[in-house]
Amino acid sequence: MVRFTLIFGATWMCAALMPAVAQISYSPDAQSSIFNSAIEVQSSIDNGVVDVQGPQDSAGPFNVPMNGGTTDLMRNVTSAISYADASSTGQGSLSMTATLGSGGIFGQGTITASALLTNGKTGGASMLTDGSADFDIYFTLATATDVTLDFHAATTDTLANPNNLAVVFLQSEQDFGLVLRAEASGTQSQDATWTGILPAGLYFLRGNGSFDELATTQFNGGAPGYLNDETFSFSLTTAPTGVPEPTSLALAGLGFAALAISRRRRERAA
Image (tube, rainbow, N blue to C red; front, side, top):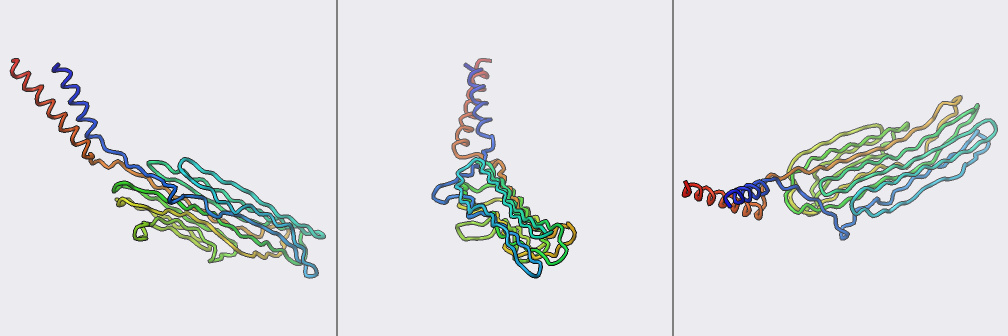
């Protein structure tokens, strides 16, 4: 009986003192999703006499609910046109992946467009392109939680267009207070990290890359003429709280009491 009591008390005491793992929850009432994401390209050739447009190729917009687990989206588009000895090929891609778990949130998105110009002697070519990669993620913390945030945003654009953007941010939905933001435009990059305790409540995490522009490039003996790339990534991880819950404290008390009783019994028996 003494041995059983010791094991019982020690087991419950250890269980009570183990740190509780913070839980992230997701509710259909605040639906997380890939939101209104799309990619489009259209090439054309202008030799100063005629303007010949290639076919428009597009994918989206995509609106995909996210209810936990991993969600992926990948699409590629192409537009090609030839006239006389000149040719122009425009390509675009949309790549997105995110994982929503009870202990963390991870994701990344990339949207790109490029134009390859070949065999042109005179005149020029252009490519019209626009697109967006957008994660809208809502999550709830039931209790104050220790978290680490790691955000990245970067843009590369031949035209250095300041309206092309990559951004990641986290804000509270209670007071719309900003927790952390990383943003880049034109040809820039930014990393942002933060570690601290987030109060209980509803939060909104967004990752977005977008562009909309007309790229015009002279033919130059096969040289690529245009490249545009917006990319972002986000990571939110939770840490054990290290503070026992009220139920755990009660179990710890029972464990200590059991140990004390068994000790008294051994002293009497001696």
